[in-house]
Length: 142
Image (tube, rainbow, N blue to C red; front, top):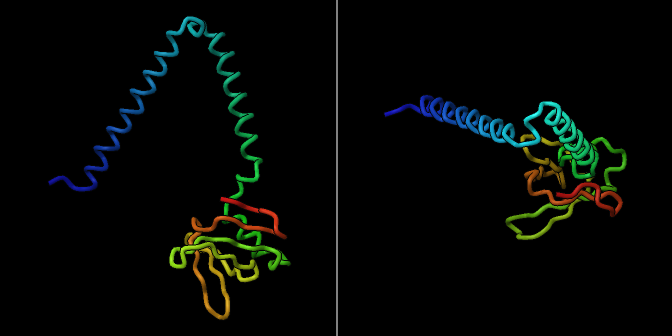
């Protein structure tokens, strides 16, 4: 019987070889295109592709969606008017959306938002949080 460690090693070698074969195919495939054979054409094409990819990445990174739920919860925790925030999440037991005020936020730990309400701690998995609103406007949305 083969150990788990050996299986991981074998699959890692197979995966690594797969990446190498893929890259060889891409390299040879693109290199055989008529206009890319000349090095200056491929240089210009590569620069254009990098610029386009960079602009696209920059556009996405400054959008509101780039903020994570952890960032939003930490912001609520530090905010002086926590009560202006509302956290909406889906409760599996009640099978519905629950809305809680930001003033109950205590901390974020191990993928959970910890809220303290009426002397009890409420643990909400971060992936269940659907929306955070500030003064009625969407601050973060899944």
